[in-house]
Image (cartoon, rainbow, N blue to C red; front, side):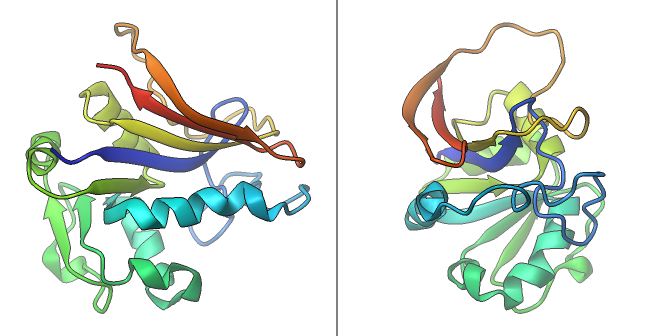
Length: 192
């Protein structure tokens, strides 16, 4: 069984909206990950650790449309180029896929994601894609959260976690670290 891991940047008040401030990131505080904080390289070491573990990437449609053309050309993301990619969308067509960024499969439903998880292979990492992450979490499909929590309150924006009234979900802390600039790394396994 494959592990499904959400990785992302989150404000202290739970917002994951527009962390990089790039195209189509419209939050009024877009780019909050890179603004107003001293750069501490070790706070970003999680990204290299994740890359060693990543066997495939997963996106919602909007995140795919933003990331694919940029990451395809990015030296910082060159190691992702040939990894298999999955896009969960009911509207994306094969003609909409970005050429030259490795094999990409469109999954049409949460059931398709569950079926993918049942197959062989290693960890699949979800980048961005807050709405997809909420749906998959509500369906009990996310196995781990790799979060960098930033010392900022954004007040509004897309949240990683659903506000649905549902049963309590326990998490088990796998790893944590606090960095000099106030960023906190939190890695949680979902308890089943």
